[in-house]
Length: 319
Image (tube, rainbow, N blue to C red):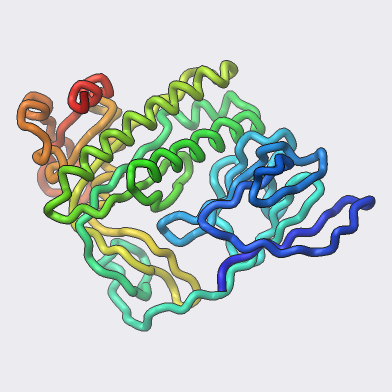
């Protein structure tokens, strides 16, 4: 069975009963007639919110700049929120109850150390060669402290929605949203590793463009949106990971952790994009030979050699 929304009106003058809507990979919610879930009350914005199923198997609700806000269990949504079975989403004069039937899990057990977790988990997965991209908004805490919740929700909702679209267009899977960060992954078999790294670089440029465009569209931002990007290629465990009651389809392992570490290193290197040691060698040597740096990574005895680039240098590479 698929996840569903049970929708009912809270308005005294509207008695439409309860209707159910299946949750596909993407649902848009709003007063506009083109939305997947059309809610006609004036308390609902034309484009109000979206619910997106990502590569980790979770459903995220994102407010996309609504006038009256999106609330889950009484709390306003600012960053993307992972929905659990029974969560109640309030949009204007409507209540949308999210229902997700329990998923069957594998009985195969692996130790916590295998996926760097703190608990033993069930695993139904395999090892794949991936190119992983991680991006987040620099100085997010400073931005959030100077903005109202509604304006912050509008900015983040638009950013997450547009980043998700460009990841899709570039052939990747959005694996998860984490706070103000996005993780995407490409399947990178040996014959196509170069193609996935190039696709990740194109995606990085798209995300930078999206951030600059959104900064122009929202002139009341305290300062322009800037993003850093980490890209890494390597083996990761991909599959359904979770407890006996709930699981996430996601990628875990050293290759993923390094992508997050490389994104964080863009700040200390004063760069925009950092590529790992199994990503940059697939590019022409002339591109990376003068842009190598060493960064310290938690859990690694020796510094890791990476390629550090600005967006302008990536543009030249892809020209």
